[in-house]
Image 1 (cartoon, rainbow, N blue to C red):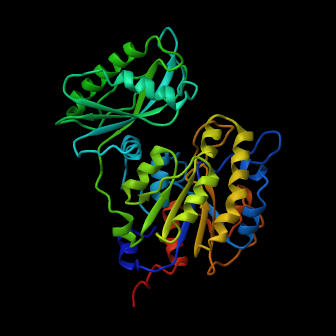
Image 2 (cartoon, rainbow, N blue to C red):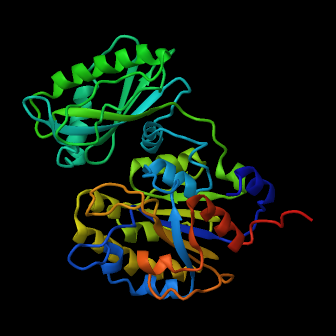
Length: 401
C-alpha cells in the first residue's frame, strides 16, 4: 500500500469535494433463516442504483483475519496506517467529549457495567443506561480522590464515560480492566512494563473506590476501563493531504478520532436526517466530509438483526439528499463488520463503493457483501480508500516523470 509520505508529496489543493459516508459496522453475516446479511436484507433502492453506476469492492480494515477496533479502522479509511499510528481508545474518547489532553495524561474509555453479588459481570453495558443517569453517576465518582494523580471524568452517551489520569510519570502501558465478556469479573489494571507499575497502582486504587461508591446502584454498579493511552504525534489531514476536512458524527469516540486528524467537528443532531442537514448547511466550507452513522454497529453488537436492517434503510432514504449536493466523489462503506449473529466486531471485509464522473462502473447491481465481492475493485486494504477518493477528486498529481 502507498505510504502516507508518497500521498503527501502528490497531494494538491483543489475545489473538488469528497464525501465519505461511514456506516459503522456495516458488514455482516447471513441470517440463518434467509442466507442474507442485514445489508442484503434491507430495502436499499438508492444504494443499489448508486452501486450500479459506481466502482465497488470490499475493504480489509487492518489485515486478513484481524478484527479491528473502531479507532484503527477509521484511521485506515482516513489514510493513516493503523499499524504505525496505533492510538488508544481512551484518547479518542477524551478528545471526543472535548477534554484538552496534556502530553503526560493517560486517558481511558469507561463503561458502566452490572456485576452480581459475587462481582461477576452480568452486563458489560449496564443495560445502556440513559445518558442522564450516566451524568449522575459520573458526578458521584468525581468525589473520589487517589494518591499520585488527578482524575478527570466526563460522561459520554448512554453507558460510556471518559477517565483521564493526570500527573507526572504516568504511563499508558496498562492492560484493559474490561474482560470483553460477561460471566467474568472485572480485571485489575495490570502494567505491561515496569515503568507503568505506579500508574497501575493509581488506577486500581481508583477502581476500588469506584466499586464502593457504586455498590448500591443498579444496574450500573461497577465500571470497566479500556484503551489506556497518551496523546500521539500524528499529522493532520491538512498537513498530510492538503484537505480542509470536517466531521459529522454524534458519538464522542468518532468525534475524537476526527479531531485527532485535524477535522473540524460540526455540531449536529442525533439522526441521519440531522447529519445530512448539517452536511448541506456546511457544504460550501470544506472539501472533505466524514459523515458517520452509528446505530448499525450498536444493533449488530446487541444481536438485533432487524434493527440493523432498519438503520441501513434509514440511511438509504437520506442518500438522495446527499446526491443532490453533487459531491465530486462519494464513498459509502463501513469501518468494520459487526454481524448481529456474532454480536461483536469481526474480521470480515466490508462493502465499499466509490462514485464520481471518473469511475469505471462495474457489473454490481446491488450494494451488499456478495455483490461487492464481484466488483471491479476486488478486496483491498481500507488504507487505499482515501488515496482512491483523492484520485477521483483530481487531488493527486502524477507520480514521477
